[in-house]
Length: 194
Image (cartoon, rainbow, N blue to C red):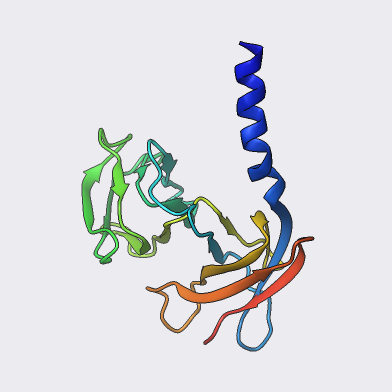
């Protein structure tokens, strides 16, 4: 048994050694940091659907919580209603069209987000309620903080990146760019086009 563990650990060691810490800052076209944005890095051979992943988009105080959720393709999302009023959650976005009619508590079945893209959510009862679920084809994703920063462990090399921010000109799409990660990692900046 100990030999099997050593063989598995030895096989995984090169994969772990390849990743380096990278601090990314996402900026808008005029150079301003973009808070509450999404960065998804697609490393060749590491993309695909999540199997068995779960997430939650709740409703509390007549608001979606969180208002921005990032999930990997294939994730099942529950929509618990923590309010004392009923909600009617829907999305007409091509990424995922669904309609959960008036309900309280938690619907029996989660919604599986099986296609990458942007799903804009609303409530048919409370017009001011809105949120986004960003679905990405990679396990390497992050949401930026107030300074537009996010940290990921990435392998060195050139990778495809998809980024999103609610105030971009076309908020229904993810913007694509490339990222060159040096062998030592470090701090890098990405700029979204307008």
